[in-house]
Image (cartoon, rainbow, N blue to C red; front, side, top):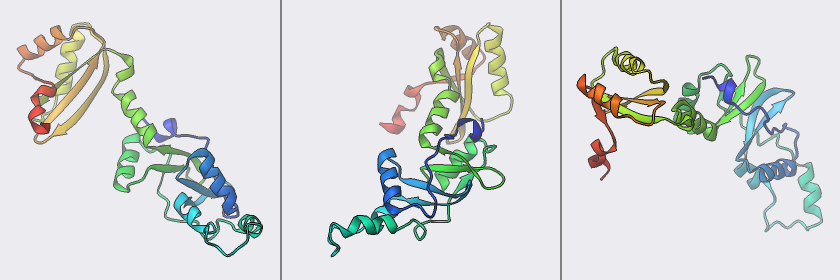
Length: 217
């Protein structure tokens, strides 16, 4: 899955010449923590909500209540734009984007094309939706997991056993825990017992939460 297929394409933006008040009002209305800053269609940076708020006149200001609105209207974002924005391209795969978000401690990433033009935005909410989709949760079926010391061919072996039983796959994913690999399958069936029995006959170790309960108890 690629970022460009899941990103938001309707993104609120501002320019360096946007007034402080307009930026603040936009962030409040759309409940945003940051706004991408563009010139034309090219992404040049971002402004954070905390910086915009800090730049607004303090309640303790000596200005009169009549002076404040006219002054705020004249203040722009030009000096607040931060250039260190982390971006990805539409062709970036989702897992790479997720790793960048984690490593850089970002709530979201701006998506730009080869010319640096803003194409969209992808955030943690979208990442979670992708995880749910990739694991096939909303497609129903049943889920089971096997644990083994990592070796090639295990997924193919399990897949063949299930396919020979005439059962369709919904999803498959691999995870690592300590020195073991855990393969998680979701299949289109209401009864896992024939699958579990067949796998146990072939010495596969079927695991569930009870096998790991001691680690979180």
